[in-house]
Image 1 (cartoon, rainbow, N blue to C red):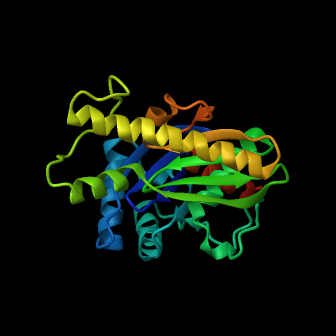
Image 2: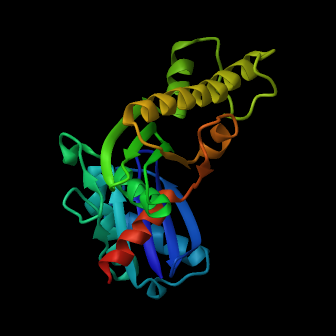
Length: 255
């Protein structure tokens, strides 16, 4: 099996692939203070908990947007499964030409998402990723990463609001019963869900108009399914798009 690991600012997501099939995922909170030994023990325990053995993992690949954790997690994976992971970075051959002014500024997850999205559509595509930040990434029909947009993420924005408004209390990010909230909880939920849905539709429209070529639009990230139900531009939701991009890159490197 292949172990694919996506280290984000909020969570680290692990995926186990048997060939092209994703057979298991598990998620941990991103903790910058844990050592490689601690992460290695946790990874071994998670594999065991889900009925897998470390020896079943024949290869590993890793993408990270948290530089202090990259080498730590790579060492942890090596200790836990006995395989050193391939680390996706600015110098990796991904098949995507990066047209950013400084390619090293682009998060590895954004390029990996572009790989997976272009592999699916083989044409112009916009990837909307609902993570710590909500990002919009644009790929041309010629497999070029053209750049994108970064917006404060849903949870980050909500936390900022609650931290600055003394009378507001923490709420669940969930679908509101109506556009017009009749209590504070529903009013905030409507603002979050419908507000971000409108933001997505507005920005996607502007991006497509500027790019000047047809684009498919795919969403990923933990809150993608919730927001997508309220948009007209998000066509497909793939929660595991980043893991799939990692699998594709590993498959190409193994040929």
